[in-house]
Length: 397
Ligand SMILES: Cc1cc2nc3c(=O)[nH]c(=O)nc-3n(C[C@H](O)[C@H](O)[C@H](O)COP(=O)(O)OP(=O)(O)OC[C@H]3O[C@@H](n4cnc5c(N)ncnc54)[C@H](O)[C@@H]3O)c2cc1C
Image 1 (cartoon, protein in one colour):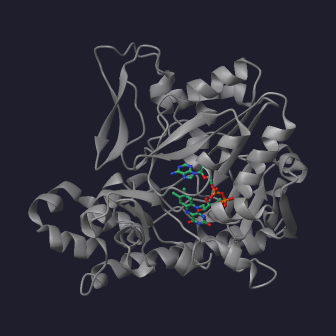
Image 2 (cartoon, helix red, strand yellow; image 1 turned 30 degrees about the vertical axis):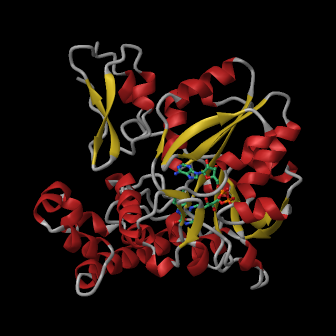
C-alpha cells in the first residue's frame, strides 16, 4: 500500500486522488475535512500518489534571493473593495484576461456555503474568485483540469493556498516548468472546518453566508474581518467580536491539523506570486481603510506578470518589512495542535454539552485560560523563527 501523508500533515490538496488512474483513492471526511483513503483492492501499488504528494515528496521552492516585495492595491475602486485585502488578485486576473492569448483562471469560489475550486474563462467571471473564503476549498478534479488546459495550449493562472499550489506542482511534475502557467498563493494561517460555519449559522439563526470578509465598515482589521449572512432576503453583517465564525476561526481550534504543521508557510515560497494583507506596510494610514496588499513576486516569471498588470498600483517594499508585518509568511507551527479539543475532537464532541464546547471553541471566560498558553507559545515560537530567518537571509533581506 502507498504511504501517503499522515493525518497530522495531510493538507487535503487531493493531488493524490487526481493522479490515481485506477480510482483507488476516495475522499473521506474527518472532522469535516477531506482526507484521501486508499482502497487496497483497487490499488496496483504504482506509488504515483506518493510521488505527487507534496508532503511525502518535497517540491522545489523559490529562492529567497529572487523574491521582491511590494505594497499595492487595485486601482479600480470596485476591485479593491471586493478583494479581501487590496484587490491585487482581482487586478492580476483581470489583466491576465486582457493580455493573454487564451487565458483561463482557477481559484476558489463560494457556492451555497461550501468552497470549491473552479475554472473561469471570461473576464466577467473574475468576481466569482475574489475575496477570501476561510474554509477549505474542494480541489477534487481541479489538477486534471489544469493539466488539460495546459495541453490545450491555454495560458493558465492558478490561485489557492500554498499547499494547493504545491499539490498542483506535485501533480504536474516536470510539466510545471512551462511558460504558460502562473501561480498565485495566499499567505495562509490556516483553514477552518466547515463545522465552524455550520455552528455560526446555527447560533446566529442565519440561513446562509454571503461573505467571509466585508469592507462595508472599512478595511481596518477589526471591522473588515467579519461575516455577512443572509437572513431571509436581508444581508446582516456581524460585528467581529460577536461573530461566532470569527471567534472560532481566531482560536484555530477547528482548523485542519496540518495547518499547525504547515511546511509551506516558510519564507521560501512555493508559487510565482504571494499575496497577503500588508498591515504596517502602507505609506499613509488612510490607505488601510480601502485595503493594502503585500505582493511578493517569488521569481522572474511572477514579477513580469505583476509588473505588466495595468490595474495595480505598486510601491517597492522590503522583504524585511514583509516579515515584520506577517508571521504567517515564515512560521507554520502552532501549539494549538496540543489543545485537548484538537487532540481528541470526537471524544469531546460526544461528552461535552454543546454549550460548553461552544464556550471553549470561542474562548469564553474561563476557557480562555486553557487556550491562551497555546497562543502565547505560538507567538514565542514565531518570534524565534523570525530571528532564525533574519539571520539566515541577512544578506538578501
Ligand atoms: C484561509 C485563508 C487564510 C489566510 N490567512 C492570511 C493571513 O494569516 N495573513 C494574511 O496576510 N493573509 C491571509 N490570507 C490572505 C488574505 O485574506 C487575502 O486573500 C490576500 O491578501 C489576497 O487579497 P486580495 O484582495 O488580493 O485578493 P482576494 O480577492 O481577496 O483573493 C482571492 C484569492 O484568494 C483565493 N482564495 C480565497 N479563498 C480561498 C480558499 N478557501 N482556498 C484557496 N484559495 C482561496 C481565490 O482563489 C483568489 O485567488 C488568507 C486567505 C485565506 C483564504
